[in-house]
Each structure stands twice: as C-alpha cells, then as structure tokens.
Amino acid sequence: MAHSITFLICVSCLSMFVKGDILPTIYWEPRAPAVHPDYWSDVVGVKLYQSVTFLCPNTKISFIPLKTASVGIYYNLYVREVNPNDTNLDYNTVCDPKKSHHVYSCNQTHDFKIDYRGLQISEVQAFPKDPTFKVGMDYIFFSTSNGLHNSLKTASTKCTMIFRIHVCEAKQHCPVPLCPSFGREKVCVRKSKLSDAPWDIQVTNNASSSLKISWKPPLNRDNAVAHYSICYRTNTSQACRTKIVAAHANSTVLENLDASTHYFIRVRAVTCKGPGNYSEEISNKTQDQAITSAPQNVTLSNTTTSSVTISWRTPRVIVGDVIYYSLCVREEPNRSLGSDCQTTIFEPTQLSAVIHGLDAYTSYGIRVRAHNFKRPGNYSEESIIKTLEIPTTEFPPSTVTSTQIHASSTMKATAERPTAQAQQGCNGSTVDSMSLFIGVIVGAIAAFAVSALVWILKAKQRKEMLPVTTSKNVNQGYRSSVSGVNSLDKNKNQDFAMDLVASK
Image 1: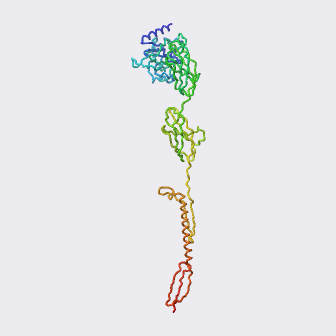
Image 2: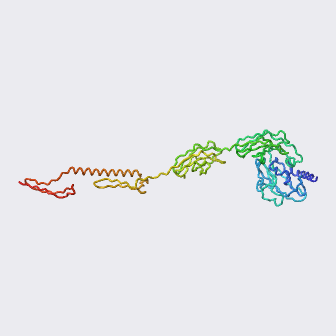
Image 3: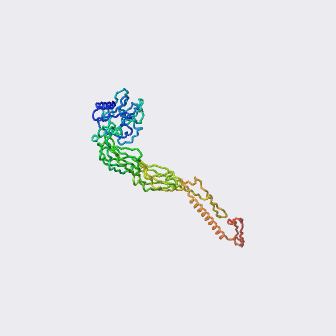
C-alpha cells in the first residue's frame, strides 16, 4: 500500500513541474518494463511541447511493481537523433556518448529523496544545455551504465537501456499513452483487446533491391492508430527487421534489399495501448539484379607481332553510368573462361584501344565489358587472335664463281656475303640479296661476250694472212734490200732478206 501511495504522490508531484501534455513517467532502471530489451525497437509517438519525465531508482522507495532486487542505482541518461527508417540499430555501438547529448545522471543516494529529470520535447529550449528535437525524426534515450557509480562516465557504446520516441507532425494523430509502460502490454495493469490486423496485404516486386507493400486499416481497433509496424525477414525463424510507417499511410516501400531474395512480410497497427495483431505473413521475391549488357560490335584489327587494335560500341542496355571499360586479355583461349586474365582499364569515352606487349606467333582471347559504380556488366563474346610471326632475313650463297675462257685465260667473279656496314645504303636500308645475285649474272654474261668478240677477231686475222715466200727476181736498172718482223707469228720472230738483182 505504501508503494502505491508513493507512486501516486510521485506522479502528482511531477505533473506540477511541467507544462503541456505529460507523458507517463519513465522509470530509468533496467527492471522497468518500458525499457525492457524486447521493446527497444518499438517507437512511442510524441508531439512538440509534450514533456517526459525520467525517474531515477531509489534504495528505499520502489517504483516498480516487481519483486526483484535492484542491481544498482547509478545510471547515466543520453539522447541521440536517429533516422526513422533505421530500424536495425546495432545496440552494441549505437549508444555512443561522444555522438549524443548528455541529459542527466542518476547520482542521488539519499534515502527517501525522489531523483528525476523532466524534459520538454521542443525545437527551442529555454536552457541551452537541454537537447532540442525536430519534427519527423526519431530519438533514443539510452544509458550505458551498469548501475555502479564508476560506470556513470564509461566510454562504452553498448546499450543497457533504450527508450525510443518519434516526434509526430502537427496534423498527425498521436495520442498520449496512458499506461506507464507505454503500450508494453506485458506489464499494463489492465490489458485491452488487441486491434485487428490490417488486411488485403499486397506485395509487389518492381525492382531488384526493393518491395512495395500496401494494406487496408484494421476493421476493429482499440484506439486510433499511432503508426504501422512492418516486419520483414528472409527466414521465418529470424528476428524481424522493422519499418515504422505513419498512421495515415497505407503503403510503403522496403528498400536496400538483396536481389533475387525471398522476403516474408507482415503488418500490424500500433495504438497508444500497444501493437495490434499481425497480418498473415506474405512472401515475395525481389527481382534479379539489373546488369549492363555486353559492348557491341567488338572488332580486332591491325594485328602485328606484338600488338593488336580492338574497338567496340557502347552496350545496348546500360544500368547507371559507365565509369570505365575493362579489357580481359589471356593466353590459351581454349581454356575455360574462368582462367586468369590480364586486365586493362580505359576511360568511359574511349571505344578503342591498342593492346601492346603481346608475344609473337601466340594466340590470345580478348573480352571487354563496362563497369558502373556498383558492379561490372557482362563481358563481350571472347575474340580470338594470333599475333604475327617474326620474319627471318635470307642471304645469297657466300661465294659465286663464274669461269669463262678468254684468250687462253680464266676469269673468276666472286660475290661474298656483305658485311653489316656494306648492307647499309645512304638511307640506312639493307642491300637486297636478289639485286646482288642479278649483278653477278650480268657480269658473267658481259665477260662471256668480251671473250667471244676477241676469239672472232683472231680468227679473222688468220684467214686474211698469206704464206711468205723467199725468191730472187731480175730487175733491170737497179737493186734494193728490205728487212721486217712478223708480228703475227710470235714463234717465228726472225729477220729475212729479199735481194733484188738488177741486170741489164
């Protein structure tokens, strides 16, 4: 009885210190049902200028109708803004004092003294140290203490208590909860019948990363709907991922989902007395991931012993913006496509490239694909090329001999392999081996012609020369003598005399 009287006095006293609507008092200790971990993801709707009071634990006065001993009395109190759509908070890291506003610390140990902290939900505070609140945002009040005095200033980011609120818009219906547990029906003194479940649930999959859900409001409910709670998960044995939707809405879109994945979805209405019954769970699958198609008209050209030119056209289907193209070049293209390849990246405006550094007379497989910010597109069909073989230089035989008879003599024409310097012309080019061979042939023919001409002239001279006869004749009136050399007959090079005797 003393506990009940104390509770009534407490609530009455607190109501005198605040203005506007007064929310039920929140008992700031882990035993309180309003901050039980089962309800950390539940959201209580509040409006601007409403006031909330946090009541600290006391060693002499028990405010909790539970027969369990308190494990401690020292608890810090922080508040932090969170996104209304962020329903999967990590309770090991989200309670970070460095990123939050310190509100109060339960640090009074005097007997029979009520220790509390009242706070008005307002965009502008009279005291600069008090936190401010924005319409449409969620806020979590949390503690990181374990009840011991030395834990009040702990740097831990692990939550020990959480109470989450949503600042409703002015026209949004957001009734003041009357039960001190804020709709936590397990501890309400009088449980009311739960609201019926929303009906005509429809789930459509229009994208690879989202699902659209629509419903109709419950036919019977215990009070005005404060908001709707959407539970979705990939397995019915998993805990729910929750999305909170405004009371006036009858549809929403679940975003940031995995592609090609089945999701199980159910909906319930939440009033000031707590959540209603869930609808029947419906399953639907997200679409396959959209992907950029392969580049078109891939062409290979200008193949050399160490390079090849590749060109292509933009893909027919482009998802997002193309940030670059990548080429996959690999040897032994007859292997499976999963084998390693050397990758080269090119600008998104570049639709051709020259691939250098290839080995001569080697087969290569080449593919190209486009990339966006999220993932690469499809590869083009692999094109196979074989680089050219390095040509070998041929030289004429090292010695060419041509022998012709010329006046009982021999002519020998020799063409030796030219040296590196001899092969270079004025422009640095190498003498063609065929030209050298033709020159040898022409020289041999010319030598043969000269020999033939000399032989013909010698035969003609022999034909015209007559035999020489020595005789004596009679000449009347005088006598004379002549001597000479036979230049045509080298073996008979001797003088002879002809005497002409004149007689009367």
